[in-house]
Length: 194
Image 1 (cartoon, helix red, strand yellow):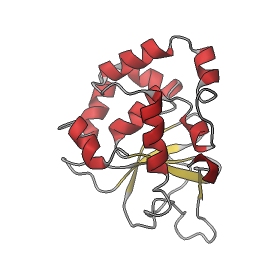
Image 2 (cartoon, one colour; image 1 turned 135 degrees about the vertical axis):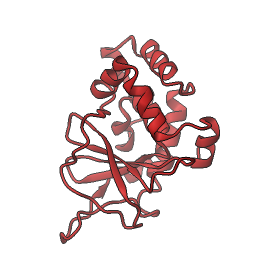
Image 3 (cartoon, one colour; image 1 turned 60 degrees about the vertical axis):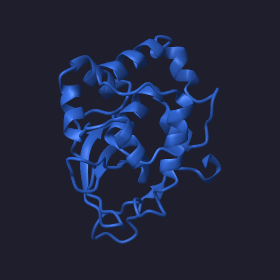
Image 4 (cartoon, rainbow, N blue to C red; image 1 turned 120 degrees about the vertical axis):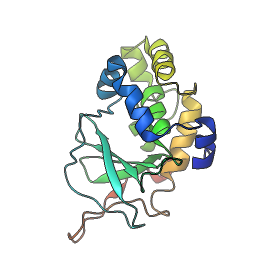
């Protein structure tokens, strides 16, 4: 598993704000993330407010076309990555990455990551996306290079996603809506997918 410390070691000195500035400096990257990557930095207004059982603050950082929201979890610090939580519009949630850099790598390398949490594995995982977007490997490499993120294979990204998603419930990242009874989200990671 790629821990937050190992992620920081791979990306020395890369803060969330620096990475967000890189995206802003490359409109083509931002457009791809918003469309194919479903990581739209202009959509930071979640459907509802959430709280985490572990008490960490959450900051919406991006949304997706289906009404989901990506959150940075924990206080912003200049020297440490923050885990990324995803909530969908159906009341489900999952921790998906140990850092913003890892979440962007996930969105770029494995566009069908939602299906992985439901139990899909290669070759079925990403097959439809690759059929519709045969240029994906070249686009993936170009986007990672533009953001100065290290290359990663779909298998590496999938392993990190599953290890991180497994932490959602035990580490207190399964959110609820404050002041509402029966408002806990359901985990996105299917037991058979672990």
